[in-house]
Image (cartoon, rainbow, N blue to C red):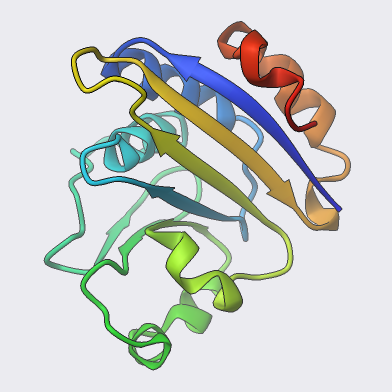
Length: 171
């Protein structure tokens, strides 16, 4: 079973704040798959979540390094699979071991490796509705039983960002 929320932020700082709120529902072992166009705010989202998870150092895009590791309240891995051409490349990178390590794993372009994601994961899709402003539309979707108990709490926590126009589309 999956559940989803349609959310809107109006600035990069607000996207970070929303991500920090989402991070309040994350637990060791969670995988967060991020999708969206280039420049939509995937790394910005991870920055906010990492701050809430106690990461003190700057959180940078892993586009060229592929994986960045941070120490916080739980270990955090930030993975970017954009440059990888095959699913086997992701496995060769040690993705299974990253997931099993017990931290929180953020995967930029996670939609590309959907078949490798664990059954329980959180998917965040970020879109830019208008190139001329800072607004971002976010679809947060929880998959799997690990989110059964946390979903109501998460939905209530992010209520301030709810996109009422899109809320009725999918629930």
